[in-house]
Length: 398
Ligand SMILES: NC(=O)c1ccc[n+]([C@@H]2O[C@H](COP(=O)([O-])OP(=O)(O)OC[C@H]3O[C@@H](n4cnc5c(N)ncnc54)[C@H](O)[C@@H]3O)[C@@H](O)[C@H]2O)c1
Ligand SMILES: CC(C)[C@H](C(=O)O)[C@@H](O)C(=O)O
Ligand SMILES: [Mg+2]
Image (tube, rainbow, N blue to C red; front, side, top):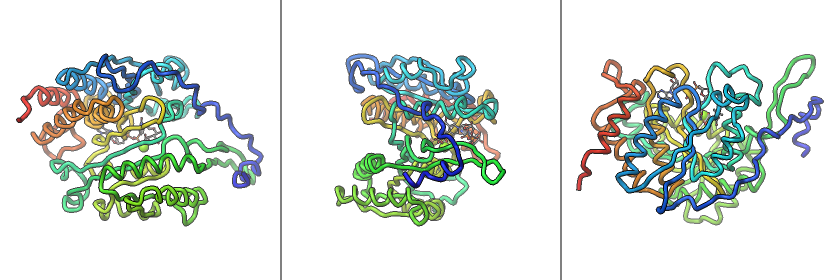
C-alpha cells in the first residue's frame, strides 16, 4: 500500500469508512421477475424536482403495467436532504431495509443548496453513495440515444448527432468516490484536501465483464476510457480490461484517454458504441453524453448488482433552480422506470410501452422547456405526465 503513503505523510488519520461500508444483505423473499404477484418497488423521490418527476413516473408506470396485466406495490422511503431533515441521516436504516427487501429501487434525485454546507457524512450526496454501495449496485448503465425529433434541442449540429446510440458502463461503487485515505489536513502551513482513486483487479474485472456482455448485445465495439498515461490506477484498469477482453474475442476492444474521449464525444459521437470507465470519468462523460440527446432531462440509468435489487435513476440531479415550478422534464425518470421494468423486474413489455409513449409524445411536438426550441410553446411536468397517459391509452397500431 505504498501508493497511499501521501495521506500518512500528511499525518492524517484515515477517516472512518463506516458510512460507506455495505451492510449485511437482507435475504430476498422472492426472485426479481415474478408474474404471480405485484412487483415490489421502493420509491425514493428525494429532493428538488424529485417528487414532481416521481409523481409522473408512478402514474405512467401503473398505466403501462395495467395494460400488460402487471401490478406494482410502491413503498416510499426517504433519502437525501429530505431524509436528513426528517431523521438526521441522509440514508436512514429504514430506507436501506425497504430497498434491500424490494425487487427494485426507483430513485429520482437528491441534493440542493440547503444542504451544501453540511459535513460530508450528512450530505444528501453521501446518502446516495451509501445507497449504491449498500446494495452493491456496481454497474451503472447510462444509455444515450439521440431521438431524431429532438436533434434540434442539442447545442450540436443535427448531422453530428443523427444515429448516435451509445452506452456508458460506469463503475459505481469504487474508485475515487470511495477510496481511502480521503479528507482534509494541513501541509506546509496551509489546508489541503485529498481523495484516493483506487481499484482492485476484481473490481475492474466485474465491471469489464458487464461491459463486454453489454457490447455483445450491441455492435460489439467496446472503448475503455482511462488516464493510463498518468495514473497508476488507470494502468491497472487498462491491464485488467485487456485481460478480460481475451475472453470476448468477438468484441473489438480499444482504449482511449479520458481527455480525448471527452473531445471525441463532441467531435464524432457516432464513433462510440459501448464505453466502460471508472466512477469519476463515467460521471463526467455521462453528463456530456446527455447533451447529445438534447437535455440532461432525457437520460435514464440503471445500476445493477449481482446479488440484490438494482437502482434505477435519471442521470440528472435535483435541479434546485427549477424545483417546485412544474418545469422539470420527467422523461429521464420515466425512461429510468422503463429500464427498471426491463433490467430489474423482467417485464420488457411494460418497458416497451413506456418507451413508445415517450417517443409518441416527442413525435407529437410536446416539449418541456429544456428540450424546446427557443420561442416555441412549452408545457410543464404535470402536463407532460398527462400527455404520456394519453399516449399510453391510445390504440396500439397493429
Ligand atoms: N443522482 C442524483 O441524485 C444527482 C445527480 C446529479 C446532481 N445531483 C445533485 O443535484 C443538485 C444540483 O446539481 P446540478 O445543478 O449540478 O445538476 P442538475 O442535474 O440538478 O442540474 C443541472 C442543470 O440541468 C437542469 N436539469 C436537470 N434535470 C432536469 C430536468 N429533469 N428537466 C429540466 N431541466 C433539468 C437543471 O435545471 C440545471 O440547470 C446538487 O445537489 C447535486 O449534488 C444529484
Ligand atoms: C450526486 C452525485 C453524488 C452523483 C454522482 O456523482 O454519482 C451524480 O452526479 C450522478 O451522476 O448520479
Ligand atoms: Mg453526475
